[in-house]
Structure formats: structure tokens, C-alpha cells
Amino acid sequence: MKHVKTLNTQTLNNTVKKGGCGECQTSCQSACKTSCTVGNQTCEQKK
Amino acid sequence: MIHQYKSNGYNIVLDVNSGAVHVVDGLCYDVISCLNRQNRDYTAETLKEPSVLEFLEQELGGAYIVSELKEALEDVAELTGAGKLFTPDCYACLLDEVKERKTVVKALCLHIAHDCNLACRYCFAEEGEYHGRRALMSYEVGKKALDFLIANSGKRRNLEVDFFGGEPLLNWQVVKDLVAYGREQEKVHDKHFRFTVTTNGVLLDDDIQEFINREMDNVVLSLDGRRKVNDRMRPFRNGSGSYDLIVPKFQKLAESRGQERYYVRGTFTRENLDFSEDILHFAELGFKQMSIEPVVGDETDPYAIRGEDLPAIMEEYDKLAKIMIEREKSGKGFHFFHFMIDLEGGPCVAKRLSGCGSGTEYLAVTPWGDLYPCHQFVGQEQFLMGDVDDGIVRPEIADEFRSCNVYTKEKCRNCFAKFYCSGGCMANAYNFHGTIHDAYDIGCEMQRKRVECAIMIKAALS
Image: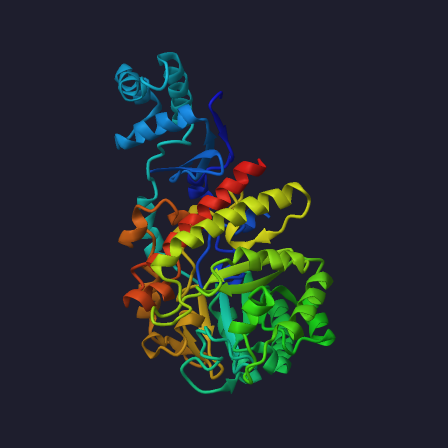
């Protein structure tokens, strides 16, 4: 594509079917404790 | 839903529902912007209809020639066909599932000490006492808390326990005993405990460091940055500063962990809106993993962030993002927690819809064993859910937290950042609006900016 560079191959909708195992880290445990940041968490299945 | 913005010379297009991120040229940026304003549910097919190109010609004909517009439109159609642009929202159908989901408890924040040897001015725990009395958790209460966690964790194998306070090092023997108990129990029940600790470092010594390195998955080291900034907000009870005592201990600990699995974590207030200097100070001290969070305080607190501070904060985040790119390119990079974003291997949609987990998957335990939705609700009696002896006796509180997500909050539904913050901190929402079904507006503004910066950094380093 001449006009576009896409940064990621994985899309969110692809995770609908296989998602939700619940083994991932709880958001607030990592560093924040006063806000909520989920987008930087790692999926346990992809580690 | 599409969010597009220009940052540091990059034209960035975020397709919110797929999470796809595109860096585009000016022509394509304008084409997408024009199409997006039409508010239509485009598909690859409808984008190929002659009327679409005619519309673009009408709108952008003065700036671009038709063949250019046609070419850009072809790229847009291709992305749309691949499910990476104008992606419809297919998650609403999951909402009932999210609300009705059977949750298990997978993380506890153990308030091992409601006492502290510092007197930080902004402390939401009120110098460790949480609107209550000074207290240390006994081994018996801690043991019951771990038993409660194991019993309520279902098939979940990885269990998280954060030793929090107040200052956990004031009750260190109990921490050590509870870790030993946890290690014993994880074998019996086929579980794996991930222990973490949050400390101000005052009592940190070689023995404690050795134990932390052996047993703790992560350690959060509280420090606000430059000496004068830290000492103004984080004094000892006699008013003297804590920086000089703590910094060498933190440096040693970070180094002993190979500069991994820790965060130096500070708080910025309206008294240091130039907080990028504090982050750079961390970097100068040799730290590689860091976080600086905006203070959350009542509007009457002189140090609280106000709406009028936002432009300066936005500039500061932009400045920090640019510095981080340069440092990364010159081999002097570091991680800033709020700019970390995983575009490829991030959490699944189920996780993004279910939020931080407070009140359901994550609970706080007071020194005497009471259960609250999270550490920030401790001491607010209307959120008392039960205790480690009787378990959850007010399940309706968990139900309320479980039912709260980015689609039930008016402010979140149309926000581009909803899948990155997952609705934000419920305690902040409650503190500012009296309900968890709202959002802390100033926090949202900053969160959106951080998501934009995080994506821009990815674009710059790709």
C-alpha cells in the first residue's frame, strides 16, 4: 500500500473467539494503584 | 469508530473496534477524515461506489487530483475489506456474557500494615490509616486471606497477592511467613502465587532485598523524582526529606534485579507539572522501569490536578514522548508505564471489556480481615463486602462492579480510548461523581493523551 503503513497484524476482533481465559494479570496490581491501564497488559496465552 | 490525530509529524489513524493502527500520508489522512465525517457504515464494496469518489472530489478536489484520491480510496477500501478500518462494533453482543460472567477471585491486595513511616501529603491512605486506626495484619488473618483466595479462585492457576500498606516493611515478618505459607499451599492446590510488594524503601536492607528478589514477581518502589519534588511531598513525620535515604537503596535493588520486574513509581501534582523532568531524573539515576502517575485529590487540595492544568500536562506528555524516542534510538531507552502499549499481543477483548477487576476478581483485605472492592475503597463502609472468616456477605456489591463496563458508561461508549483504559478507575469515578458508573473526567483527558503518545512512539520506532 502506497499511502498506509499498518503497525499491527493482530486485531481485537480476532480475540473474541479465543479470549477470556482469565489467567492474565489484574490491572491495578502492576504499578498504578491509582488509575486503570489495561492496554499495556500482556496476554498470558501469548507469553 | 475511527480516531485520527497528528502527532510529532505522524498522521495516525486508529480503527477503534479492530485496534488496527495505521500511519498514513496527508492525502490518505484527509480522505479518511472526509469519509468518517459522513458517519456511514462503510464496507469495501460501498467504498467502491462511484458516488464515494465523487464526494471526495467535491470535498478535496481543491487540494488533490482525482487519480490521487482514487488511489488513496483504494487503500482505504482494501483496509476496510481486511477488517482494519471502519470496523463495525461487534462487541455489544458480548455484553450480557460479560455482565453474567462467573468471576473468580484471582488477586488480593493485602493491607499488611495500616501504618507508615512517611507522611506523604497526598496519601489517599491518610498516612496509612485509611480513615481508621493504625494496625498490622496478623499472620492468622493473612493466612485466612490466602485460604479465601485459593477457595474462591476456581480453575484459575495464577493468583496474585500484593503486599500493600501503609508500608508493608513495617510488618515484614508476617510478609515472609505468608509467602512461605503460600508456597506450601500452591503445591497442595496446584496454584501459582505471584507475590508483589509496594514499598517506600525506608526499611529496605540487604536481607529484605534478597527476599524480594527471590519471591516477588514485581516490586513497586515509591519515589517522586527530583530531590526537592520528592521531599516536598514525601517527608518523614518530622518533616525531613526521604530522598537521600531511599534513592541508593532503590538503585541497588533495581540493579540486583537486572533492571527488570520492578517500577520506580512516583506521583506528580500541580506543584510539579514539569514531571517529565522527574522521569528523566529517574533515568539519570539509572532506572529503566518507571511510572509517574497524576495525583488524585479533592479540588480543594492545593496540589490536586485541575482542569486548567491540562494543557501544560498534555505538552509535558508530548515532550516526554519525543525525548523517549530519541533516547531509545541512541540506546538509552527506558520504559514509562503509561506509554507502554502492546498493539500485537495485548489483552483480549473480554479482558478489555471487564476492566480492572475491582470488586470481582480483585479485592483488598484490611489488617483485620475485612474485604473491600479495592485498596482505594478501604475504609468506606458502604463498600464493605465481607471478611476472611465469612467470605463475601454482600454479593450485590460484586454484582454492581461486574455490571459496570465501557458500554454501560455513557462517557466511555464513544471514547476512542475505551479499549485501552477499560473504563478507568472505579474508585476515582466514585470519588468524583458518587457512582462507579461514571468516569473521572480529568483522568480521562490524560489517559487519552497517553494512549495517543504511546501509539505515536510505536509509529516512530517502527
